[in-house]
Length: 280
Length: 320
Image 1 (cartoon, rainbow over the protein chains, first blue to last red):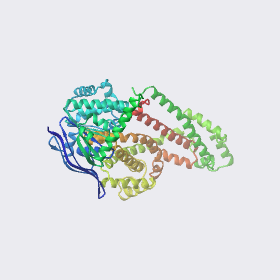
Image 2 (image 1 turned 90 degrees about the vertical axis):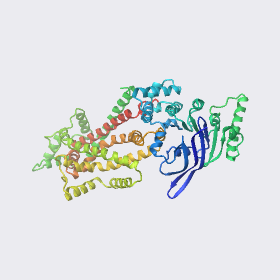
Image 3 (image 1 turned 180 degrees about the vertical axis):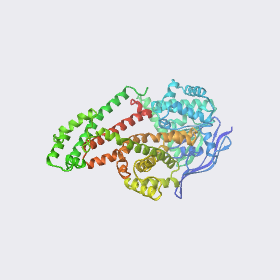
Image 4 (image 1 turned 135 degrees about the horizontal axis):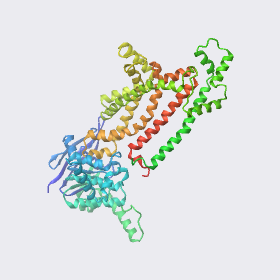
């Protein structure tokens, strides 16, 4: 199997005057074709920072070292223009907080169109058809309507589906999903996870799925890397990490998760209805 | 139009109705304050008309002519009633002239001045504010921040005098004062505009820097949009949203704010008319000027609120 993305010894540090504050230290990982790498860690552990660094989304205040190759092409050190062409095209991204990820002043259709126009040469009508197709694929019932809506008129789950659809639309070989289920309600979370599982089953696209939620990751990840304070403390196949984690922090996370789940299951078996959201 | 729905119409009607007590309040307060001035307008009027001998009877007669012998409240309501019939009365000092005519004669000069100032404000602060945000902390941004700081701190009349000294006297490029063609307009308009330019450079710069940290910018980058498109189409447009409201207030401020500059540059606009009227105790003219400025503020405030409704989809329906 060939690696879509190969990252070695990635370090990110923040420049503050003459000091350098390390944020991510010596992180290495591989993403194989059609597989999903889950990155697990709490807020501030460097999960998002790692991906932003790879895609050139950090400004000049950050220093990035290490090596990385996407389909054999080096990412670190590539020109900003080259990285820009990759983003949204060969590498799709889905971010957290779908409600604030779209510009409030433009219709969804306009924002989708500007993305497509950046990466393709479709005419007006073809573009329109393509956008309707994207939304249909994401099982949005009234695509024409949604295209005419402004972001504030749609729910978080709906916007998240637009984001996923847009990321999928240009035949990417890698999608990076940064906490895509964190900011939306439990019911939409379930639907969104179904979309990701469906994408994965098609086997065309590799996924990097960033989350702080062990339950969510266990649904989709083949390999898992656990990050803690800027370091990768554990990595391996998902089963392996869940069953025999050696790192104390990972052990702690898994035990906590199991404890919550067992209490939850006990509540169900006792015939009580658990409150909404406690499953997450 | 679809946005002009029922709620919107009601909103405009409510806003228009709300302006009536506002204007009544403005005019009444103005009337009160003017009448607190301790000299007799009839006597001043007679002096200005160069009446050779001013006797007690003549003053009494003039007072009756001008309606000043009536009680205060009666005078206010007579004035108000006439106002509603678009009759602002006659000038005390020059009974041959109507107040409306005087204002009409001076207003174009003021509007020219305020109009060119507005052009200066938009043409200069937009690109400078934009570039200062994009090239934050570079030499350009630092110089501009210094300039902004200095010009905000300097009083308008002093800047005006400095400009006259430097550009008109030392360099002999533009006329020092007076009204005559475009060249005489450049300096006073720039003086009026200067403090607004600083304000707007700062406003646009800060708004842009704030917007750059928003999630929608990160996502726009993640979608692979060109940096220039993100800056102009998204960040700049969002940053200008709050500037629109501010400009709505600045336009009447510019028109009213010419009062100092008109006197420094001997510009024959309504500001100078107002100052002259205050010296001459020409009550009807002062009253009309204050009312004019009040109406301008109310009108532009309303107009720009509506404009924001049109520009911002989030405000358009209040349901969500």
